[in-house]
Image 1 (cartoon, one colour):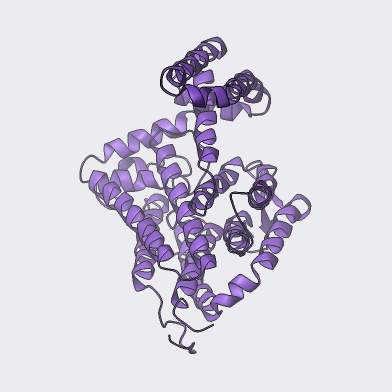
Image 2 (tube, one colour):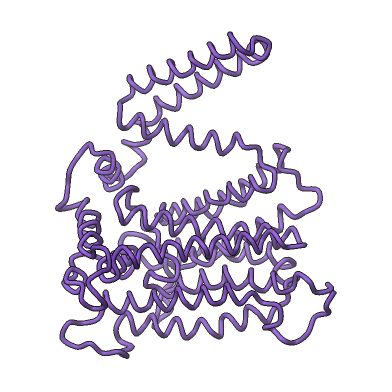
Length: 425
């Protein structure tokens, strides 16, 4: 066992650090390509978006150093306090927040705006790690399951009310963390069933979905009747009860879809499901992003040679649609390497999480792995048109200081926790 020293770099995982700097560097290159003016290809201009992003990247260095200066026990000891602080910052938006594009998600701090939901993810991951690592916590018990869900639902609800439902969806990634720590698998199964029934109802209609669900449950009953009669006697009421709940849920889908979802969300689902075609208004971004990525071909058009990128065909290309710049200028090769880098980055986090001696560190590691994977998978799926547009940034790539700092904190808190794994506490 090693004792703690004043060297903040001792024991840190340099592979993760290397991944971080590779991703933010390539991300900035693509922000530059998507925002630089055709008239003036200035490398440094701090009045531009790529110039401002460079400032945020530079300011990330002292943030990293500050994060590494604190001992691992600090993050565990004050996890609950940081979580409460993040909830207060989210709630304060409804009084002091700045409305941008219809969402009150930012604080106006004069020379820049700050989005607290980006930092709430790290605070929630710490709070979840603190809760689950308690020696009396058992995810097989209903009361402890409810405690975990409350930790997730409170920030998700506050973010949804801004309204920013896309960012709130990220908290669903924690369900896989809880499963790793003992949550029964039927929660995940019920989630997938609910998602399947939701999409099926929208696509096939209420009546057809109810008939299909009835046939499916009939097949289940036949299976139990012929192969597991004893189990059928004990569980037939549960099977019938599950069908009734499923039927009630199917009936509620149209009500939720037509009365809770906003029109823009309904339009995006209808376009995704092929029920409507709209490439001029609500479906414009997706259509342009697909066309832009396809124009890159196998090897891409080359850096600053993307006609569609330089022509501003894709709105907000430097933020949620930054992947289209990679697709056009770096082609299939570039996008494949980027996806591979994110996959290896996530797997590295999981590998490190598994070697932790502290349960707190392991749960936190799995939490950030789930968050990073959710972000990059949903963002890319959205950009290539296989998922509805929900406004989730691509980590280390999408323009924005709050997002960059939020993801930096997520990662380097874990790097600090991992560096301390062999120290005497």
